[in-house]
Image: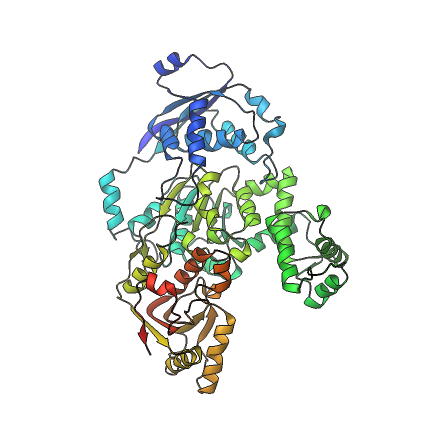
Length: 592
């Protein structure tokens, strides 16, 4: 470990550059730095590597114990974000003595009106900047991890060895590197079966060992089931007291403690919602059903973040009026209203930010705009944020999740550290290889190795039948001797699953203990044996998605399907209509 002095100096009258160099400062001028930042921010979602686009800028602070940034201007609305994200935060994380020569004083920063950021709804970057300036005002000696030599990184990538943890599990080199990452924003790219939950639990242990009290650590999960599993594993690991919440649970707690909950919580019944729809003025062709109406209202609340009082769509206005008369909130309100409260009420925002020093988020690829806001606000101003996810498993676009959100997290947090877990310990080796071959056809993803960590070879069979009824009958026959609880039948749609149910009923096959699920519904699950039914063009990929140009999303969905199988993967398709994904995965198809 190396010793460095952390201090942040702000001045409107910096010494001449020549003097600063004599004092050991590495000099950066804003104009040149701005050009480097523009290059970083032009990085899109098609990445040739996992490397952070800002690594050359961050290296200034990693390599030099003293850095001076001169001629700093804060004229535009984005300048606070760029200064904080590309200069002050990286310098703070790497223990630099940072001198900032700016055109305005530190006292003037707090009163600059243009610092409110549209997406965040308040002066998000300015508040974080002032927080670090305050922390860095007094010189502090800090320990900085030594740079890992290239040969060691290469060996760690190949090695499966690691350190044992309390429950007898062994972390491989990539998992251990993720656990021991720095205290800032850390992004973990965790492919299927790579032990992401183990890494997250071990990271909580690491943070506790670094001195953070469990009650100041917040772990956020996507749904209630994941929250329960995480809570149980934390308790078994001796980490009782850590706050674990689903996104909706966190929103409800905020609203409840701030006195913003209403008497009732829940969705409007379809009959009542249909009554609202029937009462709206209509023009030909604009009639909505209940499902479309709910989707539109969620879009207003969770994507566009439109407050009810500013609603201009008649459906949204009528819906919110009805909720208000009932003294009721719906489930989307738990997120939307808690975010809006934190944006607009500075006292409430600071109360909740002070409650948590560390924030960890599971399944980050699944979150939508309002949830990303909730995470970013709660993690500020400390920005000790640990995000675990996998862009190759982003399959909930209809719920406003986007693959770009996880790939381009380094545009929000340019100083982040990114680690990729590279071994699939769930699936047999053949299954891992096939899934890797498939997903490598996608262009919007990180280029990363996907290796097998399993001892089992794994087994894949693919069979084409003359038609779908024959395929459903084949699945029913395959299930006739299935061991309950060990097998699942997955398909793209509920309609395909119904074909399997009908075939099993005709053939007298019991489905007790057999899981039938859409691929979307199977996310996060695993079985020793998985049967994929209806793997045809038009189903996988689905015809509707092809019309929308979403072939990469369909490929991610099929990748998720393949990686649900631990030991045996059986695929049933129709002769002459076999999915292109089978050829991409190099899975040989035999005739029934």
